[in-house]
Length: 328
Image 1 (tube, rainbow, N blue to C red):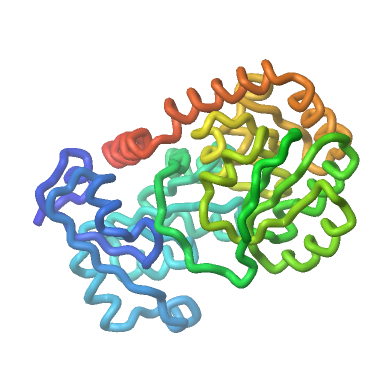
Image 2: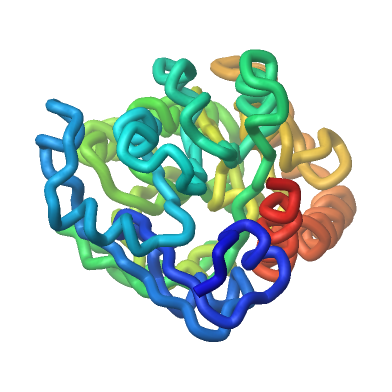
């Protein structure tokens, strides 16, 4: 076994043990590709029992697994203090995917905090010098998720200008705001894909308008993206915005609110448009601008695709991860 996990990661080691909670990143094939490790042994658990979080101690079962690890990846900053108390010399890396800052004081227990936007990177580094590194997400094909109760039926491309949006149907995503914006624009259709606890509320609102349709959960993102001219993100809070880069990867221009994540991804008036959060008139103007100018849509779409190829592919993500680990 390689003694130094960070050095091993940086120089394509032959064998490594890692430990991490079960998630999309705990896929063995994914990590082997990401870290250039030929023989990778992953110890993972589906959940951490309540005693870990509430009382601050580890069960023998979990402790034994982590003991074998060269490196520990975590996705919850609340775990850092407990892990560090048990493993003072272990390399611990935190993937920090939110804009919540309640646990800043726990970041000192991590060797590195990986953030998905530059705002959070700067905030953490203002408290702990060089503790955080910006690691934007990448778009890669995932296994289809389990079907939800609100599953879409087939939908067809309409003849007029189509705005698309997609995501969890929760209040912070601002879909109710987007519906109000699009309801005031002529010769436009809005289709929204996704499911969540706001589905029924949004469905009731959308039924008042002939140009707005909720699709529910969709089986094929490809059909969705082929059906739209512009993608819109109306979020009030958005740490990154994975669906934004998914749209960009298909050459679709994006209009988004100025949340922390989208601000890093979109170069305003170059590969998309940025508008102030909850500013209905500004959002309307942005949509109408692209609706009335097909040449501009095409130009921004091409720029969006080039941005994706340069910044948000799996190979770029892999390069970024290994570059960060070399610095530890």
